[in-house]
Image (tube, rainbow, N blue to C red; front, top):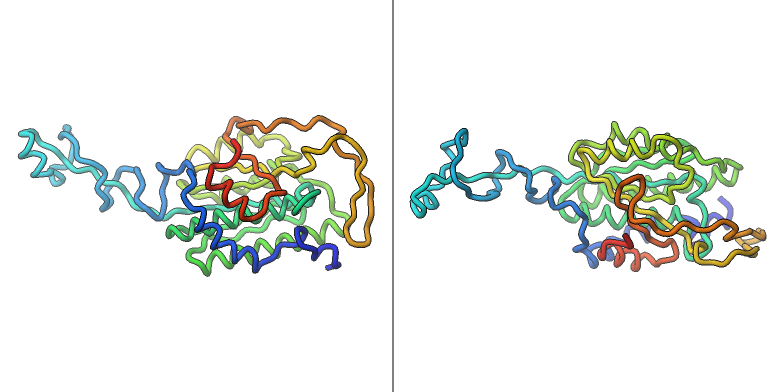
Length: 294
């Protein structure tokens, strides 16, 4: 690859993504809206697990083997224990690396910021005992990595992310700059995302195509859908022609010709968070901890 495609903010740095583990753990504690979903920790799903959920009054049909003698003796009425299932926390990281994501006017390309965000979320997931998988949507075709656990698994995910991003840059350099519809590129998620998993999608949500809303609806029915909108800093620039330089290449690009839509709290009827590609990796970790700009 040419020196331009290896420049900081253009290429993905595997070492930096591995080192982001510290930032992810340092800023843990964000509200992931997953308190009622399965994970590497006790969930609120009732079942025949070992974790005690609560103690309540006996109802017809309850298993008498779950009678709680202390509560029954104390109240004089039969009480039973209810339990909750323990299941693995599965997080499917979805990276949009179509040509529209290979753009940035500030610190980094949108595709690089998306990879950083997903990596931070992945590190947090494996730190809590969960497993992570990867799906990359791009003009070069999809890339999928099955669920992996622990630190070694996250390193494999990072390696696949870096390789997919390198392939996307090479494809763009060869002239492949047409965006496949996002709805078409993400269609396999309906089959790949297990019930009860978390699907985290980082994208600029350009060239959406037909059927994106129904796809999100299906994904959200039995999964947690976390949409993260990666915005470039050029959104804040006034309209005009700007000189762009990347190594020996020099161009003038018209920006701001069309009004930039405001950051909406929902996308196709689903909550979305907005993060800037200009924000540093540590800043992204901090914004994730605060829940993002919803």
